[in-house]
Image 1: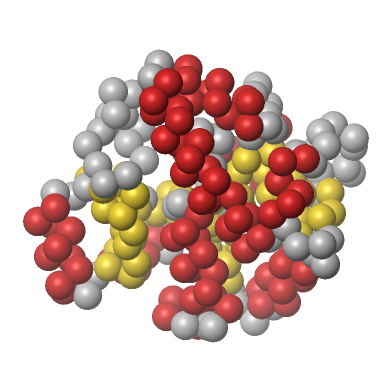
Image 2 (image 1 turned 60 degrees about the vertical axis):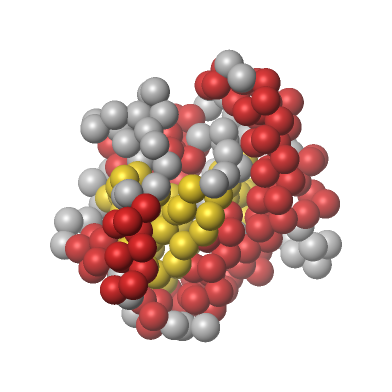
Length: 236
C-alpha cells in the first residue's frame, strides 16, 4: 500500500504534459497512468519482458540495476557497450559496460550488430543484438541500463512493434534524484570536480524531457536505495 513517504519532485512537473496523470505506485515509485495502461495492455500478448532503466546522470541507475540483480534472480543485466575508458571506481567486478575500442565499435556497426548508438560526451555508447539474443538464456527479465535518448529509441521501437519488440514487452523506469541540489551534491562527491558537475547538469537539461516516455518514475532519494529496489520488485 502506498504511504506518504515521498512527494513527487517539483522540478519534474513541468516536463510531464498536463494531460498525463502522475499516480503514486508505492513509497518511491510514481507512474504515468497513460503509459502504465499502455504497457500492461501490451504485456497481455507477450510472454517476454525487457526492463529499461534510464534517468539522470548521478541519479543512481547503476546502483538500482545492481540492486535488482542481487535481490531477485529473475533479473539479469544486459550491458550496453561504450568506447569510454573506465572511471577509477569501475573494475572487472562492477563495470556497467562492455568496453569496445573505436575499431571494434566500427566493425560491429558495419556488421549490423548495433541496434542503436549515441555519442555522449565524446564517446560512443551502443547496444548489440547479439547480447540481447543471449540474455534470455540466463534470466527471465533482462535489464537494459541506458541513457534517456537511447531509451527513447527503444520506446519508439516498442510502440511500433518493431524488431525485438514483436514478442517482447517493454517497461521503462526513469530514475531521478529528489532535487537538483541533491544531484549536484552526488556528482561533486563522485568526481570532486566542479567542472564535471557543470557539464553533467547541462546534460541533465537535455535528458529531463525524456521522462515523459517512461511508465514509472523512481525517486532515488539519498539513503533510500534499498527502498527503491524493493518498490520496483513489487511492480513485477
